Length: 330
Image 1 (cartoon, rainbow, N blue to C red):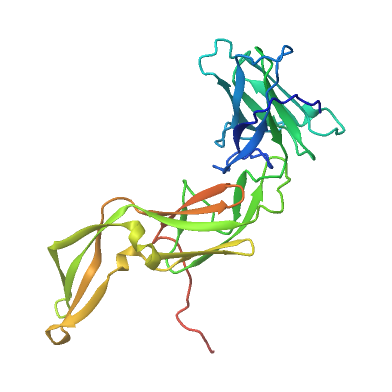
Image 2: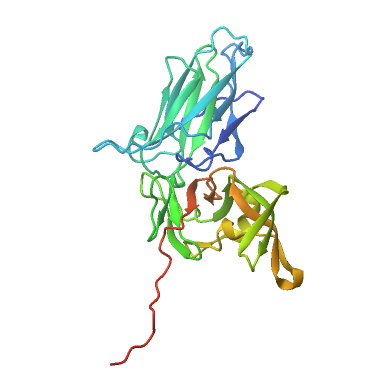
């Protein structure tokens, strides 16, 4: 890699998911880290009117890998150069990539940078395949030849989380029966089939979506009738009840979800009155305000790669089988 003469000032730049790793698609945000940006002097030794102040990489996804038959799978991210001063009339730049240290093979077989248009401050960095060592993205101003660099390495960040289990998604949701345990093998992947070993720190969270009405009800056993008191009705978030309805855990590459009970069976407290003839329920489920379901999110902490699945309780799902008798004799 050729050396760039540096003036005394070392400018700061920010890159999300690019220094130390190439952040693959679908991985969400990652923390910013500084990279070195250098600027050249003119041959006369005088300061030049335009310089690159920052070179930054967006952490959001620009495009996932291609799945077209016969088309190369790639991962892309956007990179942005910021010129100083902001009033500069000639803010055009040129982009290129080069090996940080000499490697075998053409650098563009592994990484390319493509400006949005001729001289654009925005460009797309495309990773074509895993590589070792470092690749440097170079940005040079057309006026003054100031230089900014961004160092790229491949760490094998995952782009997708896959769940494998007996119950699969149907019409956008996993439909579970009540009182069951569901287990799924969790696998990390990326377009290149080369996920780094460090990307195995999975966190699981559950969020309830929707609202229900809870109220006070008395059940008269002799008449087998219920009486609701409308003034006690309150609307609550489904999420506030999740701990009694669902549980989740992750260990040894396996996600486990237990459906504990149905919201229709929920109540905060109960007791007896009238000598035991009447049972009362406080904070008992009365009705739905909206459709209710759970979002279960798996996040790989080191990369930010995540997957969210929608879980709906379905009373029509078979949860077991019994026979009328355990033994038979002739």
